[in-house]
Image 1 (cartoon, rainbow, N blue to C red):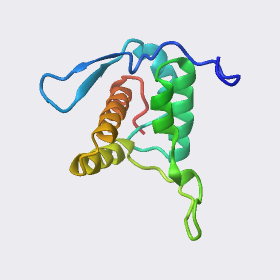
Image 2 (image 1 turned 45 degrees about the horizontal axis):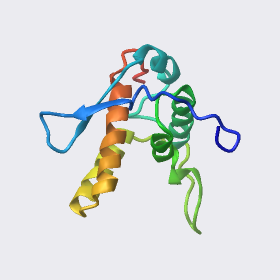
Image 3 (image 1 turned 180 degrees about the vertical axis):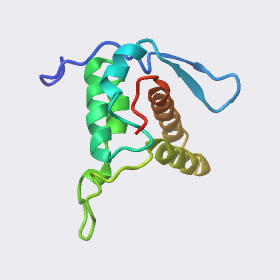
Length: 140
């Protein structure tokens, strides 16, 4: 337990990783408990959800043990949830395609040689891809 919050012990979406033989730049994350994760994510569509929904879904996945704290931190950090500077608009409830968002991040980080950021981007893309592949996920 850290700071009164008990950290989940399993990471169903991230526990098993292996290098993808078809691409030297990616990893494959294997789902171990798709059924339990599908119950949590059935009302979300990672290709059409708001930053607020992403933050809530990330918290639910972390609390269930499906993702690590590091993955939760990356997924739940949503600048659109606030108005961090004068003139900024709050986009907390405006849906967006989070797979496309992380693909753009990956491209940018690769172009600038930011290897550790690109590694994180690939890991998040694997998680989002796995969520998209769960048969019970809403595709609204």
